[in-house]
Image 1: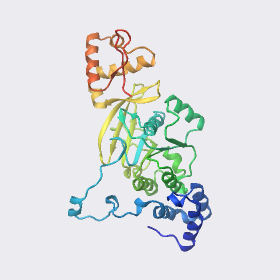
Image 2: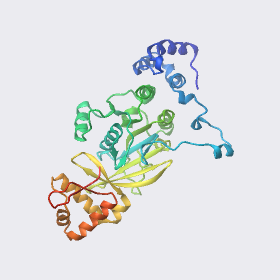
Image 3: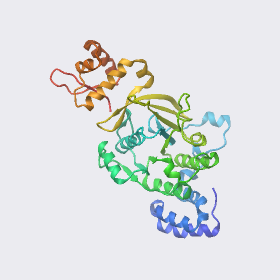
Image 4: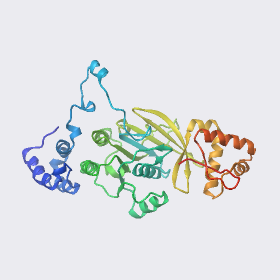
Length: 375
């Protein structure tokens, strides 16, 4: 690790350590770092190393498998690596993940959904997640807008989510401030909405600049064993097959260092959307999503391939959602009438969907058996 010159080292020791909770090894308030790096710019490139050395035992423990940098074949064969950690199993791993799409598709709603699930130990896209603390940098939102959105998604008051609406540019001290905040708060998931706001005037077309900024963010996530989810935009379609990696706006260096990429796609004038998922140590997959206007959440309909190859099942799932939004019971009779299909055929198809876990039975109303989409 880089050592600070004697003068700067003394400044850090004298001004930072006495103001931190050194009795329990907590880093100091980020405001102290912000003031110090403003007054002494030379500290900016070395202050993160200082905190790793003083406050982050994982960064200094070379005995950990993920810290070892030289391996023989024999050592690799004998090594016991822990199973990969996930914020959302098979979707968001520990490390850096992009969630990107064209403007106004619902990326921020999905990100809030993910924060909701982690902050309460609930489900998102049908996946049960472990409860943890979430730091949400909502850099394009006001407190009023956040209040409105959290109420629409019915996020409870005891959800462990911390929202911040202003943050220093990652290139100008914000990255160090983020490390301190994560270590002080014990967060397991950080959401940055959006990357453009977080990096300020950085040139997103410059591969060298993006490698430094995004690479530092990825290394921060790995060193602290947390997941960082970055909301970004897609470039305009090039007319070829869409790719959650290639479609990220700006230099390809942005996505090159990421551990995962989620691409949200929606065809204009068509219901629903597709979430494409890819990453270093994860199986590529596509989920068919439906928008639930009552809860302002995306619902997973299962594998996009399964839904596409069976349009009748896809139509039934769509009608269930639409009937619910119109406050009508999605019974087999109403679904059959809406799709102009035989009621017996619809009942049989609903039984298949129920067995596959793509619908669930709601409480009966008289002799009627309504169905609903899983949360």
